[in-house]
Image (cartoon, rainbow, N blue to C red; front, side, top):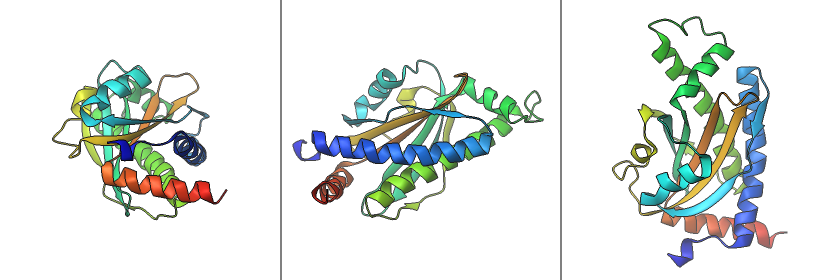
Length: 207
């Protein structure tokens, strides 16, 4: 689908926009967790959905089970935001915020609630900032837990994503000691990629 592929200038513009969004998200996450947050360089790929899991694994090095929270967003550009982290890393967050239930039978519930908090901060800040810079105001659906111990292939299952080609924008945030790393992945289908192309062209033409 040649018309949906980003040009080099469009890709650079989107990465710059994502950089600004990441800064806002990192500030909010640092406030939530009361710790310093390290950022990655945003990465952009246009992929077939059946290749999304393999592509993300190559990008992130994730080779174990993950916990994933999904949240839809829409304007004339719509898609899904996924916050993904290794299942083994969520306990580090609980310890960081001194969760009193971390060693009890309530552990799985408290970890899930904390993951929802992290996902809400990252999705709200990153997606809103990116869309606002594209002169759009997104409407978000309620977040939902895809699972707590999933393979990446299950996160990107065809029954979950109802399109063939997607724009994959990946950024990640980590604690200084690297015991926890959250990956924010934005997925947009063919028509939304076309509309993003138009929005990026409008930004580039104004420079």
